[in-house]
Length: 200
Ligand code: SF4
Ligand code: SF4
Image (tube, rainbow, N blue to C red):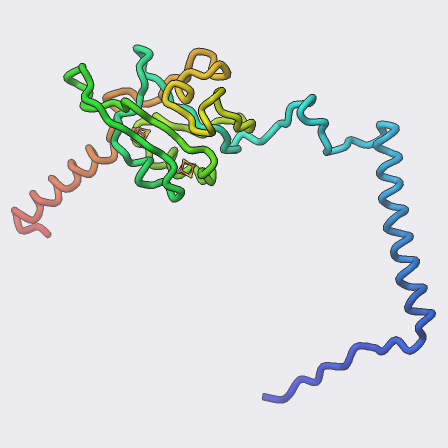
């Protein structure tokens, strides 16, 4: 294989010509910026700058903001204190204390559920890990907690702060809890029966 010869960059021998090139380029850039400013001042062009906090910011539907906990049909918290979200959390900022539920059909519920929001990195892993749609990251972007909570969101705050308008209902009911596990069990039963009958 031959050697590729790369030519050296042209040398600027004339310093005045080089300086002129720089000056005219800077002036062109300033002119473009000024024209945008003038157009936006006279409302001839839409500006992307918003006057927050007077004007609310409008984030996209996939924005992952302030967390909230969903509710069951009966108004109780949907969380079953399974600890999957706390285990998945890379910032180790979810604290759960589980208690026995008074209903026979529900094993546990969170007596305490807290998120240290100053440690959170808003990765959304907690939402992804939850099998019952009990925790979500909503569209709110102002992270101030309730008065006196020192940046720790309590269960009460996560379920029923004023902005949630009485709370958000989970989209997964009791029967929908672990559909993947049910289908997996069915498949593994089928697999075992094939092995038993020498078909595999
Ligand atoms: S968004 Fe990420 S860092 Fe924040 S609580 Fe959930 S899992 Fe933890
Ligand atoms: S929020 Fe979901 S993942 Fe976290 S403990 Fe409750 S049920 Fe489990």
